[in-house]
Image (cartoon, rainbow, N blue to C red; front, side, top):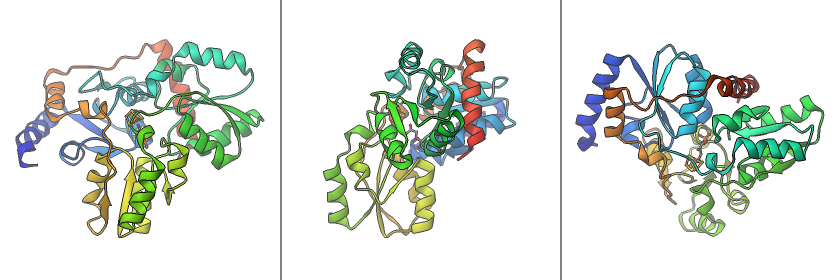
Length: 306
Ligand code: 13P
Ligand code: SF4
């Protein structure tokens, strides 16, 4: 951390002078998460904060779809992303054209899109969800449309988990997270047996990994579960920085790390944040025609809540 201090000081100074608000996702490195962020959390928390905050300038430390969601919900604010190339394998797995084709194949079924999608895909959707509220959103849509089938995209693993939780038949897209798909059930089992650790997994993991888990939830829900349960040892089956960022909050808990990095999240660095604030660069733009329709899907999700 001392290595990072000059960068952190310089960013905090620029942030003050610009009147900027820095938001950081749970997968950002600790020097960003603890060092410079004003708001931290899962993708739902960041979307809500963007909609509600007073600041005119938001720096979104996360991946591109998160910055787009912030811009869509706060269209009058300037939203910057420190590296516009920070993508997501789920978001790039599906296009707006694909969603239109799915609708044509399954007329009358509501379309629920995970927020890990482009603005153009959100614009073709009835509602968005995050891993924190996917179950509630799918149940709400099935009830509202009076149907027992729902189109859910693009994450087939999150979709399979939601289908299992709700008993609702989901039409799935074959997208997956390149980070979570690599965890295995054997790894989870070994970690539990070898370290006597509780297993907490993100629902983007394959079903056989989730079957080994003591708890499945979004990145924020993981923190809440630890708060409640306070196990002696835990393995968080998700991106590496999650455990790093929670360690301070739970000094009594030992974190065993089956560890995968998200290469997209890791494009965001202190020097990139500094350059972003200094040059006010990498502003996120969403054409209003797309933004207006995507906003409806996001706001409908926020009305369902967590
Ligand atoms: P959360 O909604 O849990 O923050 O997850 C977002 C994400 O990209 C997980 O890989
Ligand atoms: Fe996308 Fe997976 Fe990275 Fe999350 S961890 S941003 S789902 S690639």
